[in-house]
Amino acid sequence: MEPENQTEISEFFLQGLSEKPEHQTLLFTMFLSTYLVTFIGNALIILAIITDSHLHTPMYFFLFNLSLVDTLLSSTTVPKMLANIQTQSRAIPFVGCLTQMYAFHLFGTMDSFLLAVMAIDRFVAIVHLLHYLVLMCPSVCGLLLGASWMITHLQSLIHTCLMAQLTFCTGSEISHFFCDLMPLLKLSCSDTHTNELVIFAFGIVMGTSPLSCILLSYIRIFWTVFKIPSTRGKWKAFSTCGSHLTVVSLSYGTIFAVYLQPTSPSSSQKDKSAALMCGVVIPMLHPFIYSLRNKDMKAALGKLISKVAVPCPRPEQLLDVYHVPGSLLGARDTEILAGNRDME
Image (cartoon, rainbow, N blue to C red; front, side):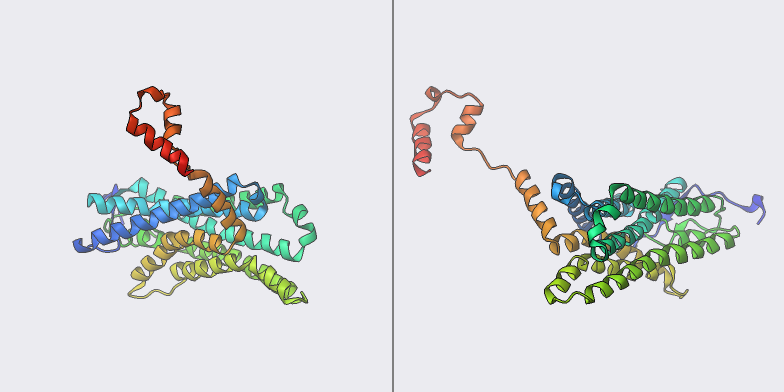
C-alpha cells in the first residue's frame, strides 16, 4: 500500500471481555477481587521467604522470583482493564500498547522458564541429594535466573521491535482485553509474514524448551524415586514435587491453547479465555498451591502473621504511654482499672 493511502493510528481501543453495560459492574468486582488476592497472596509468599532464614534455600529463592513474576504478570493487564471499566474508556496509546505487549510476553515466558528452573532444582535435590548444596550454589542459581531473564527479554524485545515497524490502517479496535501479538497483526496493513514466522518460531522454542526440561527432569526423578525401597521414602520424595507438578499442569495447559491452536471462527474468544487463565487466574492460584501443600511455607506464613498481629494494649498501659497521672482519673475509672487487675 502506498504511503499516501495510509492513515497513522496513534491509539487503539481494547474490546474487552464484554461490551454490554450490565456486565461491567460484575467484571469490575471479579477482577478487582482476583487482583487483590493475587497481589496479597504473592506478597505474603515474598515476605515470608525474606523474613524466615530457614527458607533461604535455592528452592525458595526460585519460588520468591516466581511470586514476583506472577505479581508483575497480573499487574500488566488487570489494572488497565479495571481503569477501562471504571472510566468507560477503552483507549490505549500506541506506545502504551507496545509496552503492555512487551511486558506480558516477558513475564509470561519468564513464568515458564522459572518452572523449568524449579524442575532442575527438584531434579538435583532428589537425584543428587548429597551434592545438592554444591551443584545449586548461589552462583549457579544466579546464572540460571539471569539467563532466563536475558532470553525472555530478548524474545519480547524482538516481538516489540518488529511490531513497531508495522503500519496500522485497517482499524483501531483490538479484539482482546489487552494488547497481544495476533490481534495487533490483524489490524496491520503491512506485510506481516516476518512477524508471523518469528511468532511461530519463538512459540515453538519458548514453549517446548522449558517443557522438555521439565519432562526430562521428572522422568529422571520418577526413575530415582521408584528405586527407593520404602513407601514412606517414596511419598516423602514425591511430596516435594507435588506443588510444582500442579502448577506446571495448569500453566502449560493454557500456554499451548493460546499460541499453538489452529485458526477457527472462534479463535479470538479462545485466545481471550486462555490468556485470562494464563495471565490472571493462574497467578492467583500459585500462592495457595505452594502454601497449602508446603509445611515450611505454612510455618513461615504463621510466623509472619503473628509478627504483624499486634495485641491491643491494656487501659493502664495506654495511661503510661500518654503519661496520664492517676490523680486525674475519676472514682469510676479507678474502680474499672482495679477490677481489670483483679480479673488478671
